[in-house]
Image (cartoon, rainbow, N blue to C red; front, side, top):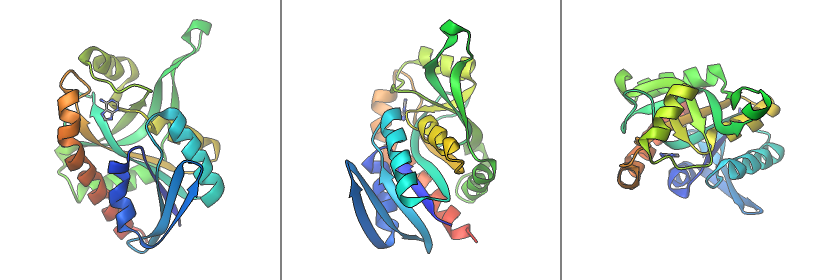
Amino acid sequence: MSHLLICAMESEAQGFRSMLSDRTDETIGTLTFSSGLLCGRPVTVVQCGVGKVNAALCTQTAILRYAPDAVINVGVAGGVGKGIVTGHVVIGSDTIQYDFDLTAIGEEDGLVSPCDRTLAEALMSCARTVLPEQRLSMGRIATGDRFVGDSATASRIRDHYNALACEMEGGAVAQVCAAWKIPCGVLRAISDNANEQSEVDFPTFLASAVAETEKIIVAYFEGLV
Ligand code: ADE
């Protein structure tokens, strides 16, 4: 069973790239796909770039080229849910593109794309081996083309869209995976609280949040049968 790991930033992807044994790199356009074995399992790692368009074009390209059996979008996020702060990890139950808005013509606000339940639960049980239960949540992840750095927007994403965390790619990855019927997981460690403090918190907590995602992903591949 082959997996595709999609990260937005090189700081999120490079740890996974360096874990690959028997690695080969292939560049398609602006994207470099690194394929090899992670804990003995076939994995392709790619840095897609920030935002929904980058995430969607990368996911589609990777699916057509590598036909992965499962896709995991891994990285950091802003915490918006009650008590979801730095040091926490959120695993997507589903995603919502909160900036997809057809309400003017009577449609629901936002665009929901599912995460694969089995994959989400597997990631959750691996996360439990790495972090205490109080620092783990499964729930909705909100995606939009905006780094959220104000508490009013963070509260709206929590209250109106019922999300625990906000980021900029997960919903796009999940939407493309749903179109191809490929199981998708979204794993995000909280780097900031999507508020006025984020400009300082994000660079401060980025590395420790990425390290949490790495431990969970390693536990996941170690446990795969
Ligand atoms: N990724 C990490 N923190 C974020 C935030 N506050 N908004 C959007 N994406 C993020």
